[in-house]
Length: 279
Ligand code: AMP
Ligand code: MN
Ligand code: MN
Ligand code: MN
Image 1 (cartoon, rainbow, N blue to C red):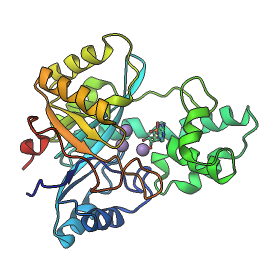
Image 2 (spheres, protein in one colour; image 1 turned 135 degrees about the horizontal axis):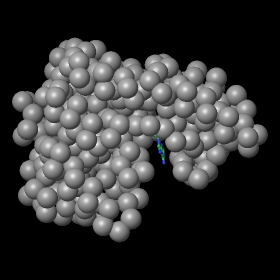
Image 3 (cartoon, rainbow, N blue to C red; image 1 turned 30 degrees about the vertical axis):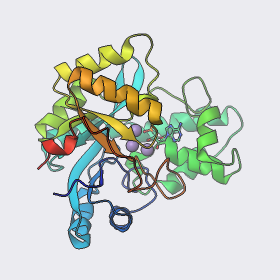
């Protein structure tokens, strides 16, 4: 395994990415990624295609997933790395979350219609290659198409987030469930993009302590949505808690990502890189 330029967080069209698993792996290889993990939201359906393509392209590959959970009322994402996508406990768990997505999308449609934005369920569905993984990202793409905002980023400033039209509650997994499913499938649990959570007060430390107690082992220190302040802050927390450090672009598509595959900064040198836990 070659960790020179590893990227352990990205999405294909199996969830809300714009490229198929194969296109994604080819782009990663072309951009110089040496070891990729595909981490679609709540679905492992792209892993076999991605793994086969990685073999073809001569890069290393690990199975992954990004699980949607809620902790103290706040949506959080937990990445699982090195998982066996065929594990039945993991698969049943993921199904239990994605089951409600279509019904949630209908409620999002009603909420948007209330502010005069019509047709969002059908419009978003056209962007969802895998309908059971219909997500806010697909709604955002449709809303850009009909001219509500110029880009998906501005959509998330005015819509689809707590307190704004188009946001509805949903029952995601718990932290405990997500870590248990990942461990059951032989994987390593990683807190995704910790800089994006708005925990109050000591919330982040409480959250990380609980995550560690449950068997969580790593923190995304370098990721697409982290500036250098975030990197330093989460590097300190990784040292404090003894976490391994991960690095992932969270790439969704060429026009829609904070950073391209292969273009991430290095991890701070003294941290323990999470690839050491993967074979
Ligand atoms: P969902 O799983 O349906 O809650 O949708 C979450 C997805 O929406 C994320 O994985 C991102 O792809 C996208 N998303 C959420 N918040 C933002 C944001 N502020 N800017 C851009 N994309 C976002
Ligand atoms: Mn996404
Ligand atoms: Mn995420
Ligand atoms: Mn992601």
